[in-house]
Length: 222
Image (tube, rainbow, N blue to C red):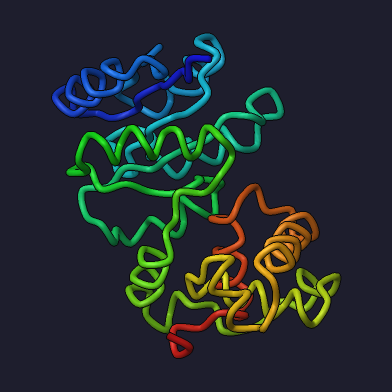
């Protein structure tokens, strides 16, 4: 089955390069391009896209606003968004993830990583490695770490699930969480899945945002 991809970036050269790379893979296809976020949502609907590569910074409607429109549209519930940034730790990446993006990529990414990233999010997983998560958290600074815990958002979590969400926010994989808490990997995965359901997180990337925004994960914990 072919994964249908839409590119949203104001730079024609970037779109052309990514299109050539993506179309070289037999299981991926670029089905549309837009140079402004305001045109993207209609294009994504009409092209029946599965994955969107979204530039964060555009002179028209920005990628964060556009990502939020996509993820809040019931007709686009299955669409996954990967945000693109010129800088690996763009200050807007966390906001884009909070808007519903499934992860982020540097525009200078190598072709094989780009193709693998599209496949990962198309399968419903988050494109957020433990290393990237830790680096992102470290870049936030105290003003963006949301140190106050929102008990309303977390009241349905068990104590163990709180521990697990905190570790997810720190960039731990399921295997690392299992080792840290003396659990089996399957049990750790189950706790992560239950926490995502209770917190209405679309994927693991959203769970990281919740951990940061509620204070379960703090920069000082790194």
